[in-house]
Image (cartoon, rainbow, N blue to C red; front, side):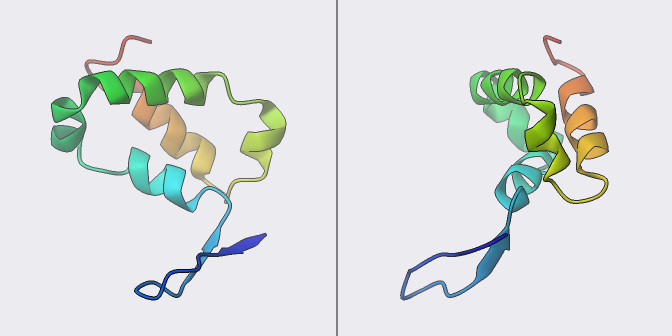
Length: 75
């Protein structure tokens, strides 16, 4: 599924999971500055239903697992 964002400055298509994967692939240093937000994102990721994860692009599950397992993670 593609999503069209209606914005005069941004005319692009995004696929399911694009924003989530962009977030988890942000540099670890950036997440160290936002540790509370990172902890919240880890909670969301670990509670995702399997069906939601199945709709993500190939390799996304591994990327999410790497984010959850980063040093400093509470999980």
